Length: 219
Ligand code: GAR
Image (cartoon, rainbow, N blue to C red; front, side, top):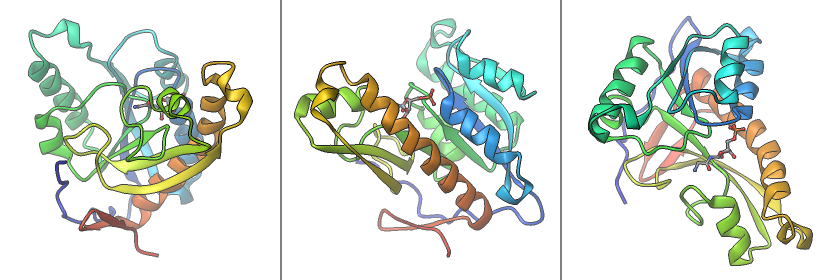
C-alpha cells in the first residue's frame, strides 16, 4: 500500500477553495457539490469539471451550471502516461486547491499524483478497505455483507487505498439481492452525496493534516 504525503493541506485564506471535479458518469455527486457551492458560506467554488469520456450526464450538469469542462479519453493518447500528462495539464490550468474524483472510473497516474497528492478526494461506494475497485457495490453484495456504505478518502497510488476521511453506513436488505445491487447503490449514493459535500466543505474551510494514515480536520 502506497503512502500519501503527510504534508498538511492548508485551506486558502480570504477566498473560497478552488475545486476541479472529475467525473465519468451520471454526476449526481457533482450535482450535490454544484448545489452546495451556491452558498458562499460553504467555502469552495467549482472552477472546472473534467471527464474521461464524452456525452456523460455529469458533463451536461457542469454545462448547465455554466462551468468550464474538458475531456481526455485514454484511447486518444499513445499511452497511459500521455493521457495522465494531458489530464494533469488541464487540471493545472484551473489552479485548484482540491481535486474531487466523483465517480471518476480511471486510476490516476504518477504525474497527476505528484502534482496533487494529498489534495485529491475520492468517493467510493463501499466501506474501504473492503471492496475496492470498480465494482464495490456488487462485490459487497456477492460477499454477503449485511452492512455496506461509502468512503470518502484521499487518493494515493493504490486502488482505493488512500487515507480514509469519512464513512457512511447503509444496511443491506434481502431484497437487494434481487436486482443486482441497483437499489442498494442508489441508497448508498444518497448517503454518499451528503458525506462528500460535508467532507469537501470541511476540507475547503479548515484544511487537513495526515498522521500515520489518520486524516485530521481541525474542529
Ligand atoms: C458513486 O457511487 C461513486 O462512489 C462511484 O460511482 C458512483 C458515481 O455516481 N465510484 C466508484 O465506483 C469508483 N470506484 P455519480 O456519477 O452519480 O456521482
